[in-house]
Length: 117
Image 1: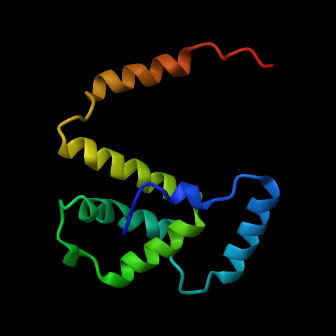
Image 2 (image 1 turned 180 degrees about the vertical axis):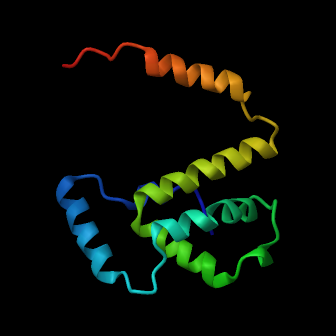
């Protein structure tokens, strides 16, 4: 059900994104899952997708609501795509060393900004 392809559903031109956003807001009902609720269940959904957790851990309605939210929210779709990547890396024993990862993050943060064009 969940794949790291939700980003492809979001239009890229400004006009298309504005139409998509307006349509998403109009179609969203009061009972739709919001970002906070989506983030609360994403870890369990990613683990379920990867087979690390029983499908019975979350009701089907939660998966359906999350799927609907992800089709409307690029930010949450990106978070789930990252979680799915991390769960896959963990399952394959390929998670990077956390200290090495933080060193890389710090070095990028301290690097001078590229010249603007």
